[in-house]
Image (cartoon, rainbow, N blue to C red):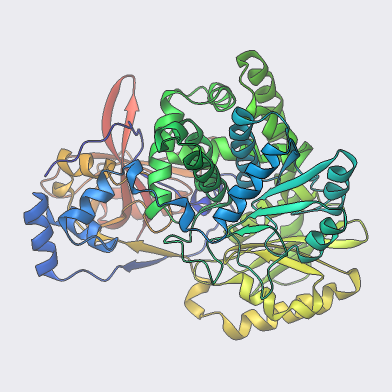
Length: 594
């Protein structure tokens, strides 16, 4: 069975945030990686898929790793359809949300679309506001200031709504724990509709409607939507109420795909459908703001990897360095000349962000060294003048050096604010919950979170966090793991396999780029280090009786002695297409050598 796709994808290899950002700051000596082969499926199941799909054992194995075991599941995976999207009214409170918005429109009320300052929040605000403006004029947007107001719904934002006679606020990518803020809004006769995807607390806020697929009483079939995804379900429901078809909402999917990619949510189910069609929009008729960002990076066609690591950081840079409003202006601007101007300004913010996170990372590493904290189970650092907008990125950098749960604090007003990042398999949100007595507030996900505390509680929290992690983290979690899908020979890398791998796109969590393991590999004698600081490897490699393959390994210069003098070695890698001067060839992206 042959599946065809409309969306052209240049690169097959999806890189995690960890893998890409490590190119930006890398120590001279990197930690050892664990190679683990995924449990291999039963041979009968592999044979069945090979027969019904007319494919080879490698593709069948990859599908079974993704829970796909029959023709219909494979068809749904390889051929996403807009019809696969769920009825938005299956989400708890959706009818209440739509009725309140329709009432506001009928009564000529002013509606404020409120969202967080990161990519998920700003794309969600841009999406909902853009749609609402097509059916009703009294719409405005509000992004809280990262430094003055902090994350989520703010009292200042509610006061702004009161001063400007907004009687309805639609909160996107935030609000699920804003109990006091919603109570405060009620005293001012301001209603809230919450569209969130974070884990709720024991008590829900008293909003008119609370849309969150992670609510325990919500039976929506898919609970891994990002904030922008929940916003999309809201406008889809509004559209259904107005006899619009799902095809009418395709132009908004460039925003949804950007949010899905940036928020690192599972690339499964509804997310995969939304990202698949969103990439088609990005590469065929993107909104002027995204088109302007594409021009900044001089690339005509983007992959999901480009969205994660090129487009998303630029959108994020607005909120990190200046204000999230700049991102919304860019994403809702339909004048090409003005969009280009906004994109140019954001490009400068992104450049400033890079400089800042490099500087702070160096200071944080020095602090760890000076305090003799290299052997701890956690990394917790603080300096009062560190830029709040980049401490999350710095936390990711520190994990690249010391692979352990990491929190970076700075001063924010009269409190300390922090961003936390975790290692694979360890739930940092649960760890923070165990230390909640020392925190003012916190929120987030398994792998990323934010928090504030009083200065006098910093050391108490640091000690408690170390104790919780030391007692709960598994030893193997402190060594990064490369999960391998299958061991193969180079002779099995056929044009057919390459075509099939393309159809596994878009890659992301729970649909990672397939990783392969090959043994008895040799370099043909041309292996060398490349890059401005010679941190990367460039090889031409082969096995006995196999073709030669070009291979590149980022940050693998320490492995050069392993491949010299044509000594045999083992490699783990993913397969990608490389285009150079109009010629497309297969290239192996090396992840590790031994």
